[in-house]
Image (cartoon, rainbow, N blue to C red; front, side, top):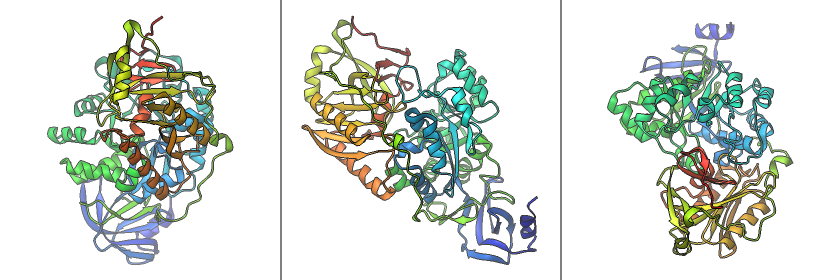
Length: 566
């Protein structure tokens, strides 16, 4: 028993901190009431009227809610070093992160996961890791590492490791794949995340029966409702490329449905968007704009997320609970006035010690020898070419076909682009080449080493020469983003940490990201797509319907490569 808390709660000894004249957002009863908060040893000792404290702050009637929880995110997708990313989350009121470091794990395996844990160990945030379950995501691409159950076992019980990350291999679950089953068994009794876009019927029932507990891939209320009925908690996603909140919350409001098994997440969100909007605070604001009561939105952002993941003493304002708090100016603008982690005020602009990665994590781009024509299109039956058709504002694609004879003119007119994925981990020389429509690029080439989930190098262009120049530039800087036009590099953003993250400060990185995005749009990239985040998903062979990996064009719905001509 914590005697100090008991004595402070009874006004027998002074609190270390008193937040006076607060409006308490009580997520247990769904009510708001005036009171003081007495804090000691990082926890809430009592709520009521407290006279004496070592530090007393008059909040003058401001609202105080529990710290927000981002229920599923990939820190690496922000491209900020983990320390900088966490400070940006704290700036907007997030005090707990549930992360899946499968981006860096696909490049560097357990060494990458350990780096993410070590780099956040002493930060003023609750940082939890869901162990990446699919490294690589499928056998249809080459990643930097293969993470099996035995390797997971080595770090499964380290501080901060919560459970098993998104299980994208749905077919493996349904077919009792041995490797998948070993991972599910290893984390039995702990939180297990799902990843099942569009899964319905008996397949959904079986997926839930296997022990999958959450899913963040619903794009409609109908899909989310089916998963809720199957006992799967729904994480409502609002990121940079995938924005599903409005559709789902509108359905919740229309049906008057309970949100007790729902939380908010970002999945993948660029630092520039976080810097401008925040993450979960933005979800709350958007949900309220859709008609969800503010209290329900805050419950999703706090206690519901904590309950879904079994986080002890987090997500509410109550005696004995951690003093992770957000002081709000009001419940309309949703602007944080002050953020506390374990009873200490957080200064998001303060200096932090950013842990630098080992040299091995900084030298991760190893492209094999390139052939004379690296971007020559493969031949398919009947002289037809498969085309990835992008869906505006989504990462989904449709599948189309075009006669081979029509391709050169479409490339010249800018209605079509070439897209290629180059294996960049083991110098295998693998290159997958295809066509994409809807990206919008009118000239030059754009390339990135952020290419979900195996993070090979992906390049899109109108002509082979610019595509090759872009590849050479990313080899030179060991990963990042680059834009090339007429054989010259327009701009490059190096991402030296595994080709995924920068060591720049958030302010500097935000400016650079915005500069590159603007230049990409000026070269024709559609305003309905994020030039880099959307592009990075074109190599992920678990999202319908057509993708490309370093092994070729992949039909996700048939779960096989498109057959080439002999």
